[in-house]
Image 1 (tube, rainbow, N blue to C red):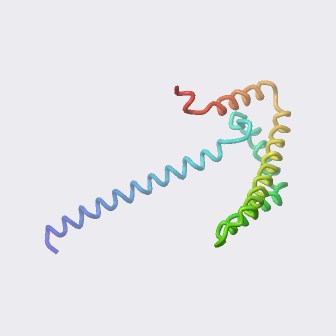
Image 2 (image 1 turned 45 degrees about the vertical axis):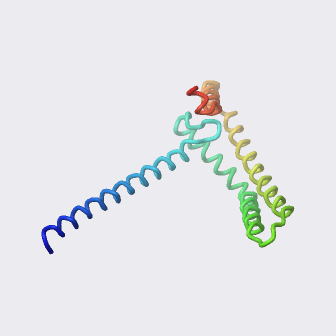
Image 3 (image 1 turned 90 degrees about the horizontal axis):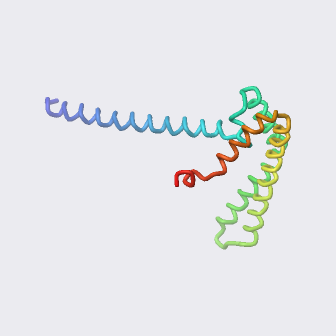
Length: 149
């Protein structure tokens, strides 16, 4: 191996490693940000609560989801049915609409149950804690680009 070909090989490996390190770092940051966003977002702005109450709220919401497991499965099955109908050679729009309506109704039912559990939890909070939650809800309800205008 000549000196010139060795230099080309080393430079090529350095460039390749630079791109690999950049890709890994970018992927890692994206993964961290997405996992933090999932952990932070809670109904009624629960991230403002003290740690013990935040855990209690998460537990209550998880319990509500477990209670609604069958409805969640029905929504998932309705979505699978809709995808199956879409994959057919001829589209049955009535069946597709019905499957999507079943999925939408099941999703709405689950959301209503989880939100009601959050409301029940909010009823146990003090006035100051509810005010903090209200401020968080207001901040969340304002679109991000509207605040910058």
